Image 1 (tube, rainbow, N blue to C red):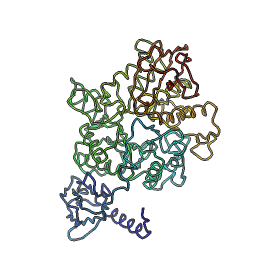
Image 2: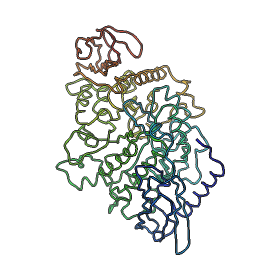
Image 3: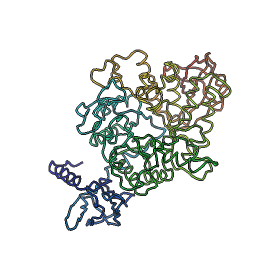
Image 4: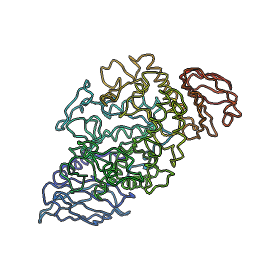
Length: 616
């Protein structure tokens, strides 16, 4: 890569300052040789009547197709077509206000070096995703803890809803820890600017799509994180929010059109009911409330049926991937978006990046309901093209009851077995993201009552069943937290992420023996998973649970792995002769955790799960 001179950097900065003084452009730049070569620039001027200005562009390969004044006199859109012959450079957009000329530079860049090789590779069942909140993971740069001019100036680690100072440098500092743990992919809660007056620690209320949150390091540090991940053969997943923005978003405070957002006579929140969207007996009014109702009063709901809004969101998604080298996409509050719009957006991303993967948050109840929002085998009027979903069904109606309920005909581990048996509804259930907890749920260690054996069972299941596994930060060192009465309790600081922490999970200083043991347990299974194709991409066969004993296999031509989950209060015998469809030809098994070799008949203790590679 060529070095950029200080003079060049200065010229770019000065150009951006001039542009910022006169008009703001969304997207702020684009690239040559993109599949999305018809770009609609939303332009925000600084005075009412700006939308009547005459505009001209003279740049080889860039054609001005249309100029559209919007409802708000400060806004207009410029539609451009970028030909395959266009070269990288600065596109000069000339604004003519009654003979007074103003020029704004819109950079047309060359695409990322090595595109298709070092990013946009997708996040699949071969990966292990680590979900973290930047503000709560590690403070690597104390100089950005507070940024002058931003509304939220809180900084107090003793208060769960204040900012704590974690940032992207803190994540970068500990990538080697994550890689050693067996993590391949980092998913962070949103990194986009969040200039709300409070509760900015979670990031889900954007205030400027084209700005990365400065208190976590800004765009430069986000790019550095992407580069450092890719250097290590790891991946970056971005959290996308299409449904809503923060109430201090610049496009809400000064709305480009009258219908940029969903407006109601009085405040109307979403019903959060998914059923009206597919109910054959449902009403349009109920469906409208689900989709168009606001998430909370502080998060205005975007109108994706407005074509300008749709283009704005789709282009921002593509811009994010190309600009920062994103590999995968997690989509927040998926079911509350306009679903035909989501199909368009998903397709735009995969058209541009064929290996790009995405899964949507589908916090619903019932496998059929969840499958409706993904690519599925169900005959319905609307067909989703979403590749995968966040699999709340295997959580709520699977692993949680398996760990916490007594065994019964439909209870306990039978629920896990039954839920997985419904995978025939999905086009590819292996694309679903599976998890034990996340930033919105009680932490799994608290969910199982602080029982380490139950937690180990849950982790062993997570790392051996089908799907894309996601581990929530701190699970590996027994972090606890109850969602009620405050969700901030499940978003506490990772131990060792701040100077002066008495307990440091990165170095094991101050950790208890149980915490170190759990950390090693996760690492052993996670790293075994990475090199075992039977688990990452092989078949799954499950047997009907017997008195609390659940047996399933992961297998391919290279390996056969027996996964035995004993949820009962008694030890259980495992005899290969009962599972001959998978054990035929094998004479023993090796326990992945302790390395012990077993014969073809043995007992497993109560409340244990063993991962065993079969041997001949």
